[in-house]
Length: 250
Image 1 (cartoon, helix red, strand yellow):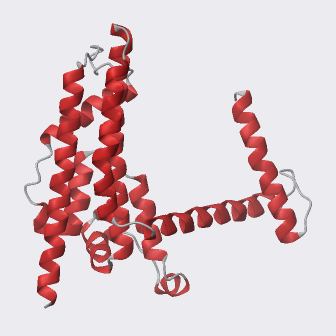
Image 2 (cartoon, rainbow, N blue to C red; image 1 turned 30 degrees about the vertical axis):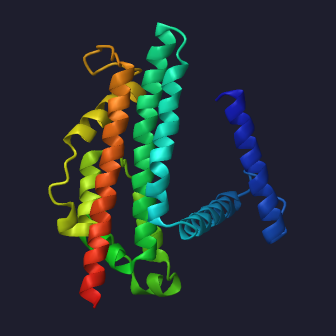
Image 3 (cartoon, rainbow, N blue to C red; image 1 turned 45 degrees about the vertical axis):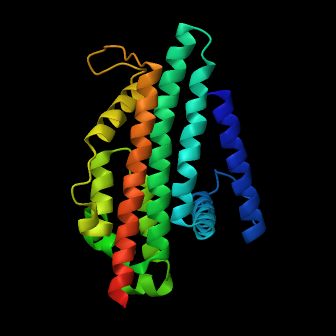
């Protein structure tokens, strides 16, 4: 373990000890037989605080805000392409911006989906019923009664664990939520972009055949345009679904 990691671990451990002392008036360390149980409670407390903060953040925003800000974030990333002062720098910047653009898209989809499921009960039910990783979960009525936000909590946790630059996962999640409005959603080009991003991030810019990836600045700009257009299509389909539901209510 590196010295930085050791220092971070020590800080976490000390924070846990201080919390146990405040909550239970106990002076113990990891050698105490009660340590595992109390440390688990400390970890659960941290998770609960993080989850509460997540709910509060989602409640402060609308899904439309995420879509409105997205083009600006892509534009900011694109401006970095002009900073390369040599061929080597340009190659590195192209890869960084390309990968970052996909990360921005993943963050957008995650934020939009999470916001919608915590604010719209019908979409939450659609996702739970239609997405296999959620529809097969079993929870008791007692758990739901004791924790009214339990379903939303499980859904958010599941969504955060997903790889939302995987186009198959994106189609499955959105299809469960919006049904026919996501039929024929074209993801092939986005899929190719995401696969190339995977090579850049996980294989140091090489394909599975060890072929180095060469990206021109224009290729990166085109990928950004494709990602922006994909986001516009998603917004349009989500808005259409909302309008149809509103019309059906009258």
